[in-house]
Amino acid sequence: MPKTVSDVVIERLKDWGVTQVFGFPGDGIGAFDGALADAERDGEGIEYIRPTHEEICALMATAYAKFTGKVGVCVATSSPGGFHMINGLYDARMDNQPVVAIVGQQGLDSLGTFTQQESNLERAFQDVACYVQTVVSPAQVEAVVDTAFRTAKARLQPAVIVLPHDVQSMKAVTPPAAHWVARASRVPASTAITPPEHELRKAAEILNAGERVTFLVGAGAQGATDEVLRAAELTGAGIITALRGKDVIPANVPFHTQQVGLLGSLPSLHQIHDCDTLLMLGTNYPYGEFLPETGSARAIQVDLKPEQMGIRYPTEVNLWGDVKATLEALIPMLKAKDDLSWQRKIIDEMEGWEREEEAEAMAGYDDGANPRRFYFELNKQLPDNVIVTADAGTTADWYAHHLRFRRGMRGDLSGRLATMLAAMPYATAAKFAYPDRPVICTIGDGAFQMLGMNELITVKKYLNRFPNKQFVVMIMHNNDLGQVSWEMRTEDANPVWRTAQDVESIDYAGYARLLGFQGIRVESDDEASEAIKTALAFDGVTVIDAIVSRNIPPLPPQITKQYAKNTGIALLQGDPFELDVIKDSATALATEGIERVKGALHIGRDDSKG
Image 1: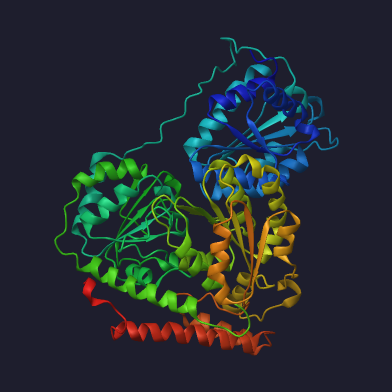
Image 2 (image 1 turned 180 degrees about the vertical axis):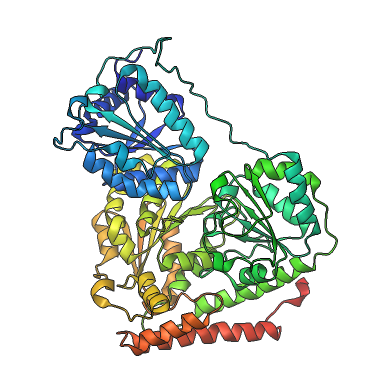
C-alpha cells in the first residue's frame, strides 16, 4: 500500500500506463524524487530519464507523446525548474500533445510569503496548461492526478500538477465518501468521436459532387492512413500533407504531393489553386495564403479540436471527430468516381517535381557542399522503421523537399511553436520510446549548439540500454543561422547582420569523438553518400559534420514578386554575402528552370508508365 502522497502519485502514474518520466531533480521536488528512488530499488519503479536541462525534459515528453500516442510525463523542481519547462510545454500545447508535468513547490506555509523559490506556479502555468492544480492534502491527490491525465488526453494539451514539498511526504489516505472529497476514476474519456449521420451525409454530398478534390492531411490523422487512402481512391483526390503529417501518407502513393507552402512542392501549390473541393483531416495548417481563394473551393474539416475548425478557410461542414472513426463512418457514403483525370494530372506533375528536386540536389556550388545533396542521399538509404527528426531552420526545408517516408517510418519536428531547439530532444525521446529502431537527427549547427551538444551527453549516458544503438546526427555546418538570414532578406528586405547571425565554427566530428562516438567530417558533395552509408552501418552514435554553403536559397515552389523584391533590396543594401548569394541563387534557379522546361518537353520522361 502507498505510504505517502508521493507513493500515491507513482502508483497512479503506473495505473495510467506511464513507464518513463523525463525529469531533473531539485529540493522542491525532493521527497517525490526519493519515492521514485525507493520504487526503483524495490523493482517496482518508473524509469527515470534525466537529460541535461528541464526544458529538454518537457520537449522530450512532448516528443514521446508524438511518437507513441501516449501521455508524456516530465518532472522538475519548484520555480526555476518549472519555469524552464514552460517552452517545452508550449510545444505540446501548440502541437496538440498530451503531456503531464509534475512540478515541485515550497511548503504550504510558504505560499504567498515571498520566500525563496516560492512563486505562484498556478498563475505561471495557467496559459500553457489545460489544467493546473496544486495538491494541498492527501485526500485530494488521486483526483488531481486522474483529472490531469484524463484532461490532457481528451483535450490534447499539457496539464500541470504542483506538489508542495511538505505535501509530497504526507501520509497517504484512502479518499473517504465525504463532503468535498472526490473519488476519481483512472479511466480515460473516449476520444473515438464520430459526428452525427446528417453531418456526415452533408460532407459526403460535397465530396461526391467535387470534380477536383484535394485532401490536406495533418498529424491529427495518425493511425488513419488506410482510411485516408481509401477515401482518396473513391473521390479521385490528390493528397497534400502538412509538414507534421508527412509520415501519415507513404511517399510511394503517387498522388501524394508532399507539403504545401514555402517548403512545399509545386504540384501541391497547383492542387491548392485548382481544386474545387478541400477536405482538411487533422490539421490546423497555419498559412492561409497557401489555401484556396475564398469561394473557389467547397471545404470540409475533420478534427478533435473544435476551436481550431473553420478558422483558416470558410468551411461548409466542420466535423468534430476523430479522423479514423469519422472516415470509417463517411466512406460508405462516398461514391467511386469514374473520371480520374484530376488524379492522373497530379501524378504526372509529381513525377516532374521529383526530377526537379533531384537536379537541385545534384547541383554543385563553389562555396561549400550542397545541403540538399545530403538529404537526397540520406533518403536513398533510409532504413526501414527509421525515426527522423529535424529542427525548424533550413533543415526543415531540406527535410520537406527530399525525404520520402515509407510506411512504418516516422518523422517529426516542432510544428506551430517551430523551435529550433527540438531536433535533438525529439531524437533522444524517440530512442527511449523505441530503443530497437534507428534514429536520425537532422539539424543545423545553430540548433546543435543550442541543445544538441549537451543532449549527445544524454545519449552517451544511456546508450547501453538501447538494443539498437544506431543514432545518427547529421549537422548542416554553415556557420550561419540560415533560416533567419533568409527570412531577414525575403520578409524584411534586410541584409544579413553577421553580428547576430554568425555561428561560431567548431569541430563537431571531433566533439563526437571526444565523447567516444564516430565522427565524420564531410567537405564535398561526392563524399555525402559514403558518409551516410558508413554512419548507418555503425552500431552506435555517428555525427556527420557536413560543411555546406550558407548561401544556397531555400527556394519556395513559386517565387512571389515580394519575395524577389525584398531579396534584391537586401542584397543592394550591402549584404556581406551578396555575390555568393546571387551566384548560388542563379544556379538553383537555373537548375529549377531547366528541369521545368525539360518536363514541359517530356525530355527524360519515361512515357512507358502512362
